Amino acid sequence: MTPTLVRNLRNADPSAPTDTGTRARDWAEIQERMLAPLYEAVYDRLEVGAATRMLSLGCGSGLALLIAAARGAQVTGVDSDRDRLALARARLLPDEGAEGAPAHRARLHESGLPPGAGADGAPYDLITVFEPIGCAAGDSEGLVPALEAALPLAARGATVVLTGWGPPERCATAPVLRVAARLTESARPPRPGGWRPTLRDDLEDVAARTGLRPDGSGRVSCPFGYADQESAVRGLLSTGLFDAAVRATDRSQVEKEVAEALHPYRRPDGTVWMPNVFRYLVCTT
Picture (cartoon, rainbow, N blue to C red):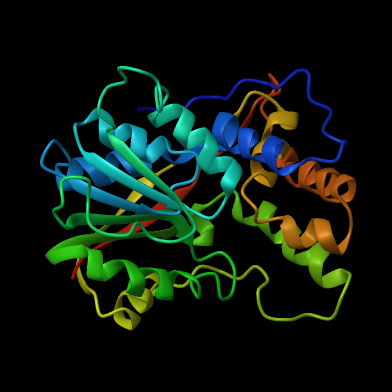
């Protein structure tokens, strides 16, 4: 799957308040596909297929699960965002509850982990975390306990994949993300949690804290491409990385400043293109 310029949501008013359902749709329709090259690279390297039993932590609206299921994998997803999970359910389980529906190729759970191993009773042999860390101080803190809770569901010697943002100098989106930190800090005294440069050993640090053994890594180009500035703003705000800035100021202010930060990446035809590099770390339990 290759990155594409996403379509413009013509009927949306970018200055209007956005409810959680709308933001989840923005994520699913605009932003989530930007990470598709990362999903594909990981699956190619690990030869994900019919023999794979995968647990995805923070599965979002299910694109990574859908790609793995298309390769024949048995997939389970967990996410705390009810709206994103509903979209994942519509994608992966469209006939759920229907008479004569085919056997489910996926299991989806809100918040807590599934009660046991995969649907076939066997433990998971692959755990993925495709929500990249490394662009905000402390953004891996919730990941460590989540991994510690999930590891007992994995087979001995199972593979765990962690992902993160690449070096700021390789990520055109980094200056745009700094807008969130600046707006947040301008409205209140600075405190931990703002934007910071990605550190080389962010992923290795998580692995060490959870007792995982690193077994290789890679970098993947994931350009963020949008049909126009409006789509870019909506997509970026759907990530949740600007939530603190919205709370500290207001949505219209954040949208305005994000749009200004996007100006260097606008092409003559109005499209927005930001080259980025993401990193993944392959570990074993």
